[in-house]
Image (cartoon, rainbow, N blue to C red; front, side, top):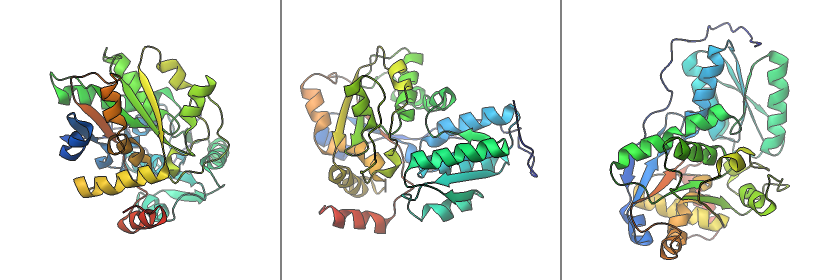
Length: 333
């Protein structure tokens, strides 16, 4: 397999996972709203700021083991941070290609991880085309934000951790946000691997970034044409075909909320848990704050025993000022 030599040798001695075992904590506020015990898997506390380090860290470690010594990634934010963090820890250079829609605050954050940042195209798909060209040109490891089995295997560690942390009380459901489908594939892969594929998955998206919902309706991955949602890190035009391969035997409930509902969830979560997350994560939290989980419990979609686990996937693209601006723009009290 082709590789390129770096002036800084790769740290091949780093064999331990690059992610941490994130806390699983109770949410009294969401428990009241859902009428059921709610637990929060706080993957926003990962070193790179999101769950992405699980899969992307696993992917990059494997490629370094094969001889690669340079990383090129495309990302609207969280995946790029994961790739940059992993590359820094492993001692190899990284180039992160971001679309114009990515907030400018991400550039210095990526540079703090010693990554080179390039801005290309209006949406992620255009940035990924440029990243693909750069990786081929420099014979570097191309890091796709969500579409690779090694990425899904890394994300599947969420399930094994959740089951271990829940002990004898099995989750009644796992609630996740869906962008390109990497996290969803990881959750489903983990459910299969742990022999608990009957645990329901609640998949949440926002209007204008709902490529999974569109794929379910079409029966195959289809392009939604454009990303109009404020949840830019959910911004893939088409979901990975991997979701269709892994969803066999898994009960998935798909729901789409508005940008306003996602932002309301971010604001209420900040008040309830003193934690900032971005709208991509707010999409999952909106399942609790908007009443979707309570309805799924009442109609029997979610079993009547066990806690509901929300994956708090992260939020690099948020600050107090940005959240305040979102609230003003969408008239959120």
